[in-house]
Length: 399
Image (cartoon, rainbow, N blue to C red; front, side, top):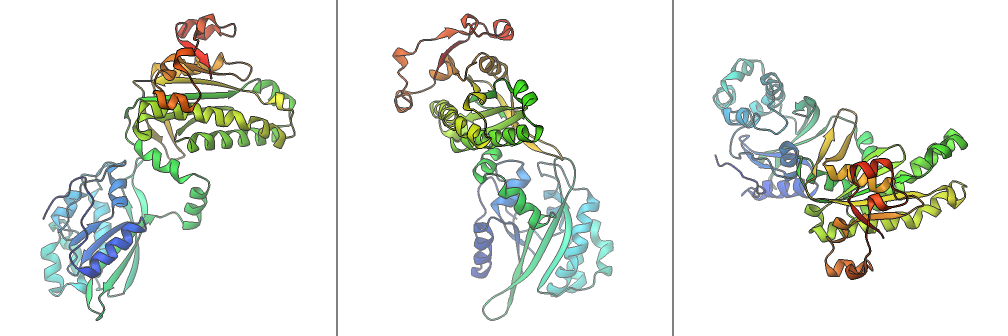
């Protein structure tokens, strides 16, 4: 019974099972594949990523029988926590009748294969030889057990012989709801969020942007108009961040926070360059946002603060109501101070961010390291009291 490490499972040796495994893998399903005696022969990468709680592949042994002692042991190693034995019993109650119909040795063979904790259930099983069967179950989740829908399908070869079963899982949420949720997001961003699923220290460029004079604008405009403006603004800002390779952080009022990880973009220079590119892209569409809301362009002015975080602690915070990327570190607060000083629609970038750029990236952005002139934040005419107090010695330039 070999143990699998972080590498993908090899396709099964049986050609029919190998074809089924490849199809589940290529379709991105959460899936398990069992042979004709209900030995596990394959688990899709996407299923294993879910159970690792991130982008890694959870270890999962192949070769053991569903409901066996080895299976019970595996259910206790998952990132989000072990399944309670009552939950595993509920799974076996659904799959056991399928196994009973397939195993040539009937109840005695099934009882011998299952963990003793399930033996009292075997006599109550009614064999289920349906080609397709569905059932509900649970998996570990961040806030507790998550309802899952399973679809088990018996597989046959070209002669009609039984070769095994596939079990495909999905959240119990209706596909119409899943489709609506994913259609509102960008798949590239969902994939990047997986990198930050497990919090850790990650060097990154930080972008803060905020609407200047928002309080006055909110008082002057009808509430519905101001809401529409805010919604359009954050949608456009998020798309600029995503297109540049960044991660969208918290939205606070009319503000946008984003992080550009060196880990996902390939280098510190690439992360700094992406942060600057996202800023320029958003600045270039601000006037269009004003026009779409029938506002003078001078009413929509954004401040930008760009900074580098060498020791940021970045990760996802997920609750029953939302999931978001956040970061902790002094540099986050410093980026906010830089942004507050960038009045008049300016974009201020710290020296520590600009000097992350290598010669090639700097040239592509039209930045000459030898000609950049920096000013201490405390010396800016627009410096706020908080900036003078918290980050007076940070050197910044306009980009």
